Image (cartoon, rainbow, N blue to C red):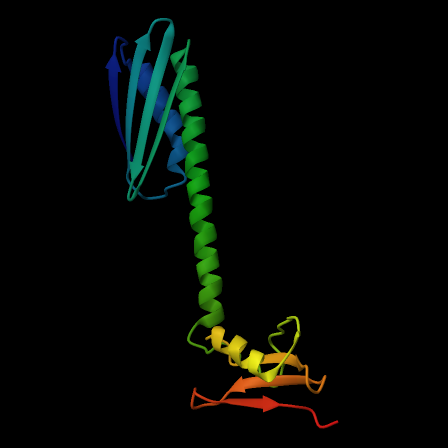
Length: 178
Protein backbone atom coordinates (compact mmCIF):
# COMPACT_ATOMS: atom_id res chain seq x y z
CA UNK A 1 0.00 0.00 0.00
CA UNK A 2 1.29 3.45 -0.89
CA UNK A 3 0.57 6.58 1.13
CA UNK A 4 1.10 9.32 -1.44
CA UNK A 5 1.59 13.00 -0.68
CA UNK A 6 2.07 15.46 -3.55
CA UNK A 7 3.34 18.97 -2.87
CA UNK A 8 3.39 21.58 -5.62
CA UNK A 9 5.23 24.85 -6.02
CA UNK A 10 4.60 27.22 -8.92
CA UNK A 11 2.91 24.29 -10.64
CA UNK A 12 -0.57 22.86 -10.12
CA UNK A 13 -0.77 19.20 -9.09
CA UNK A 14 -3.75 18.18 -11.19
CA UNK A 15 -5.72 14.97 -10.82
CA UNK A 16 -4.05 13.69 -14.01
CA UNK A 17 -0.59 14.20 -12.49
CA UNK A 18 -1.68 12.46 -9.29
CA UNK A 19 -3.06 9.48 -11.26
CA UNK A 20 0.12 9.33 -13.34
CA UNK A 21 2.35 9.29 -10.25
CA UNK A 22 0.20 6.59 -8.58
CA UNK A 23 0.35 4.48 -11.74
CA UNK A 24 4.15 4.82 -11.97
CA UNK A 25 4.64 4.08 -8.27
CA UNK A 26 2.97 0.73 -8.95
CA UNK A 27 6.31 -0.32 -10.48
CA UNK A 28 7.94 0.23 -7.11
CA UNK A 29 5.18 -1.28 -5.01
CA UNK A 30 5.96 -4.80 -6.29
CA UNK A 31 9.37 -4.75 -4.54
CA UNK A 32 7.84 -4.33 -1.09
CA UNK A 33 4.91 -6.73 -1.10
CA UNK A 34 2.57 -5.94 1.81
CA UNK A 35 4.78 -3.26 3.37
CA UNK A 36 3.40 0.26 3.65
CA UNK A 37 5.28 2.73 1.48
CA UNK A 38 5.38 6.44 2.25
CA UNK A 39 5.81 8.41 -0.97
CA UNK A 40 6.36 12.17 -0.93
CA UNK A 41 6.44 13.82 -4.32
CA UNK A 42 7.31 17.48 -4.80
CA UNK A 43 6.75 19.07 -8.18
CA UNK A 44 7.86 22.54 -9.11
CA UNK A 45 8.72 24.69 -12.07
CA UNK A 46 11.96 26.63 -12.39
CA UNK A 47 12.62 28.64 -15.55
CA UNK A 48 11.88 26.29 -18.46
CA UNK A 49 12.17 23.07 -16.44
CA UNK A 50 9.72 20.92 -14.51
CA UNK A 51 11.35 19.34 -11.45
CA UNK A 52 10.07 16.20 -9.74
CA UNK A 53 11.50 15.15 -6.36
CA UNK A 54 10.45 11.76 -5.03
CA UNK A 55 11.11 10.41 -1.55
CA UNK A 56 10.16 6.83 -0.84
CA UNK A 57 10.45 5.33 2.63
CA UNK A 58 9.58 1.96 4.10
CA UNK A 59 10.53 0.19 7.29
CA UNK A 60 14.22 0.96 7.73
CA UNK A 61 14.93 2.21 4.18
CA UNK A 62 14.68 5.54 2.33
CA UNK A 63 15.18 6.36 -1.32
CA UNK A 64 15.37 9.70 -3.11
CA UNK A 65 15.39 10.85 -6.72
CA UNK A 66 15.39 14.39 -8.13
CA UNK A 67 15.26 15.10 -11.86
CA UNK A 68 14.33 17.95 -14.13
CA UNK A 69 13.03 17.98 -17.66
CA UNK A 70 11.04 20.27 -19.90
CA UNK A 71 8.12 17.86 -19.44
CA UNK A 72 6.92 16.97 -15.92
CA UNK A 73 5.83 13.48 -16.99
CA UNK A 74 9.32 12.76 -18.32
CA UNK A 75 10.81 13.98 -15.04
CA UNK A 76 8.49 11.67 -13.10
CA UNK A 77 9.49 8.74 -15.35
CA UNK A 78 13.19 9.44 -14.72
CA UNK A 79 12.59 9.55 -10.96
CA UNK A 80 10.80 6.21 -11.03
CA UNK A 81 13.65 4.66 -13.04
CA UNK A 82 16.21 5.99 -10.54
CA UNK A 83 14.21 4.80 -7.52
CA UNK A 84 13.63 1.39 -9.04
CA UNK A 85 17.37 1.02 -9.66
CA UNK A 86 18.18 2.02 -6.07
CA UNK A 87 15.60 -0.40 -4.67
CA UNK A 88 16.79 -3.29 -6.87
CA UNK A 89 20.40 -2.64 -5.83
CA UNK A 90 19.46 -2.61 -2.14
CA UNK A 91 17.32 -5.75 -2.44
CA UNK A 92 20.10 -7.57 -4.31
CA UNK A 93 22.62 -6.62 -1.61
CA UNK A 94 20.28 -7.81 1.14
CA UNK A 95 19.59 -11.10 -0.64
CA UNK A 96 23.31 -11.68 -1.21
CA UNK A 97 24.09 -10.97 2.45
CA UNK A 98 21.30 -13.30 3.59
CA UNK A 99 22.50 -16.00 1.20
CA UNK A 100 26.08 -15.69 2.45
CA UNK A 101 24.88 -15.74 6.05
CA UNK A 102 22.72 -18.80 5.44
CA UNK A 103 25.63 -20.62 3.79
CA UNK A 104 27.83 -19.81 6.79
CA UNK A 105 25.07 -20.91 9.13
CA UNK A 106 24.54 -24.08 7.14
CA UNK A 107 28.25 -24.86 7.28
CA UNK A 108 28.61 -24.29 11.02
CA UNK A 109 25.04 -24.86 12.17
CA UNK A 110 25.65 -26.46 15.53
CA UNK A 111 28.36 -28.70 14.18
CA UNK A 112 32.00 -28.45 14.92
CA UNK A 113 34.13 -27.61 11.96
CA UNK A 114 35.63 -30.75 10.46
CA UNK A 115 38.97 -31.50 12.07
CA UNK A 116 41.94 -32.40 9.95
CA UNK A 117 44.19 -35.05 11.38
CA UNK A 118 47.49 -36.48 10.30
CA UNK A 119 47.95 -33.90 7.53
CA UNK A 120 50.53 -31.20 6.87
CA UNK A 121 48.39 -28.07 7.10
CA UNK A 122 51.06 -25.38 7.04
CA UNK A 123 54.42 -24.92 5.34
CA UNK A 124 56.87 -22.18 6.23
CA UNK A 125 59.81 -21.34 3.98
CA UNK A 126 62.81 -19.50 5.30
CA UNK A 127 66.49 -19.08 4.65
CA UNK A 128 68.98 -21.20 6.63
CA UNK A 129 72.13 -19.25 7.46
CA UNK A 130 75.48 -20.57 8.75
CA UNK A 131 76.11 -19.41 12.34
CA UNK A 132 77.45 -20.55 15.66
CA UNK A 133 75.22 -21.97 18.39
CA UNK A 134 75.75 -18.79 20.44
CA UNK A 135 74.64 -16.59 17.51
CA UNK A 136 71.61 -18.83 17.03
CA UNK A 137 70.68 -18.40 20.73
CA UNK A 138 70.95 -14.61 20.39
CA UNK A 139 68.79 -14.64 17.24
CA UNK A 140 66.15 -16.82 18.91
CA UNK A 141 66.11 -14.54 21.98
CA UNK A 142 65.49 -11.53 19.68
CA UNK A 143 62.46 -13.21 18.14
CA UNK A 144 60.31 -13.73 21.24
CA UNK A 145 57.40 -15.39 19.40
CA UNK A 146 59.55 -18.06 17.75
CA UNK A 147 59.92 -21.42 19.45
CA UNK A 148 62.80 -22.68 17.30
CA UNK A 149 65.45 -21.62 14.82
CA UNK A 150 66.93 -23.73 12.07
CA UNK A 151 70.53 -22.91 11.08
CA UNK A 152 73.72 -24.41 9.67
CA UNK A 153 76.15 -24.98 12.51
CA UNK A 154 79.50 -23.45 11.40
CA UNK A 155 81.41 -25.91 13.62
CA UNK A 156 79.87 -29.11 12.17
CA UNK A 157 78.53 -27.83 8.80
CA UNK A 158 75.26 -29.66 9.58
CA UNK A 159 71.70 -28.35 9.81
CA UNK A 160 70.71 -27.88 13.47
CA UNK A 161 67.49 -26.83 15.16
CA UNK A 162 67.74 -24.72 18.30
CA UNK A 163 64.52 -24.66 20.37
CA UNK A 164 63.25 -23.15 23.61
CA UNK A 165 62.77 -25.55 26.47
CA UNK A 166 59.40 -25.56 28.28
CA UNK A 167 60.93 -23.71 31.25
CA UNK A 168 61.42 -20.69 28.94
CA UNK A 169 64.96 -20.11 30.23
CA UNK A 170 66.99 -22.83 28.52
CA UNK A 171 67.45 -24.12 25.00
CA UNK A 172 67.70 -27.49 23.33
CA UNK A 173 69.43 -28.38 20.10
CA UNK A 174 68.55 -31.04 17.51
CA UNK A 175 71.57 -32.26 15.54
CA UNK A 176 71.72 -35.10 12.99
CA UNK A 177 74.01 -38.03 13.80
CA UNK A 178 75.60 -38.69 10.45
